[in-house]
Length: 153
Image 1: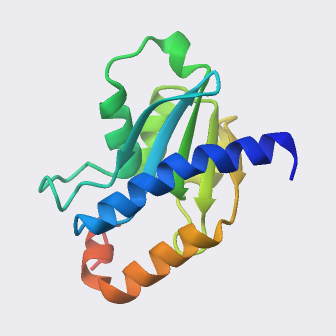
Image 2: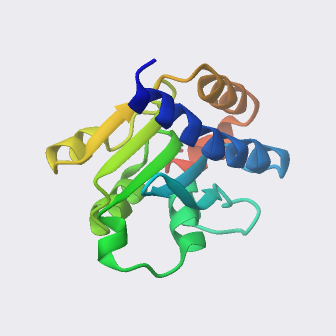
């Protein structure tokens, strides 16, 4: 495993821990971590169920946990997420000009990766087996909640 991929996998462990925590709370098992200069500065998880929220996806919760940051910090950041980011989370990544996104998996859901790439964001997909299993199990167990989370019927 190359250094960059190995480092990405280590960073994904923080997002995976959040995804498991969200699952254990009865929520959607998606987690995220914001990494700046190699340091995890914030983590988040999908809390739509737990907080009765319309917008608390893993990435948006992570950004909220990070608090207000100057543009210079976002310019050095990587958003690490267990699942391909939806349009809302893609928009947040673009808004704050986060230059790199590491995605645990995109088999169960393919989000805004093409838009991110078109806007110059470095997108890395790890195709992580645990991320795939978490989402596959969740979607089979909670199809209605999953469809609600992604804006489907």
